[in-house]
Image (cartoon, rainbow, N blue to C red):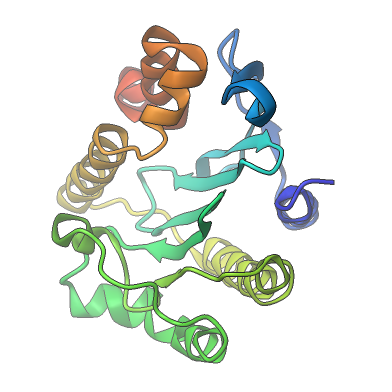
Length: 250
């Protein structure tokens, strides 16, 4: 079993238990893709698998799981709400490279500078953040341009050993996902047209940033080529622009 398989299994089981899930279409060629990384004795087979679901309040729940043996393990798990809810995004980036682990976990806000929004969606999870921060020390600087997309409850850490990932990071992942689903359960649809436009603008800003700056672009390009990578990023991982005509006519 790979390092992040338990995270993925837990997430899917929890979603199935708490939501009325339906499949979300995965474009042809993206559900499963194999490749090779490294050369000679360091060569490793790499497998990328994709998973996607939706529910009445969540437009897309999707995961990309990259399994590359000792050289590479990644789980990118993101939840995108329907644009008639002011819910934050759920974002989990769990990355293991030969040099160590990079862990980012957050409920990423639509409106970073809005005190009322922070009161609604950040304040309730600060106790959870504080509990896990004790064991998951801050991972250092991250790009200033990215800061608007993260909440004050952002867990960003670089654990050095697998055991911390398997225990402390996993515990934080579980707590954050359960808390997020609590928010989903309580969420009421927004009907004010001006507010709906602001939500859609905020969602587009986030998705555009994530698609443009996707740190996995280089890895996927080396594995599968540029054409496959760009289509995977824009046609599946961050597909809001492609789906907008359907959303607007709903």
